[in-house]
Amino acid sequence: MDKASISRELGHNEFDPRGTLALIVLYFVVLTLMWLFTYFVEFLGNGPTVIGLLGFLVSL
Image 1 (cartoon, rainbow, N blue to C red):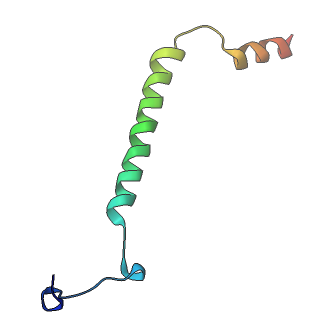
Image 2: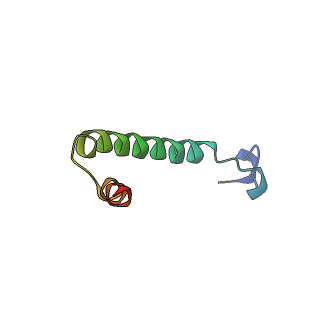
């Protein structure tokens, strides 16, 4: 590749990784939605959890 075909050279200070940030945010949104789904499906309908059991024992 010769120098005549390069129109503009970007340095490290000019790089703006918006796409990478968008992917990271999307990843955490998906993880949060998966956690919420798992919580409501698996744990919400069950009996007392460790926290619920401790609250019950403290109230005695």
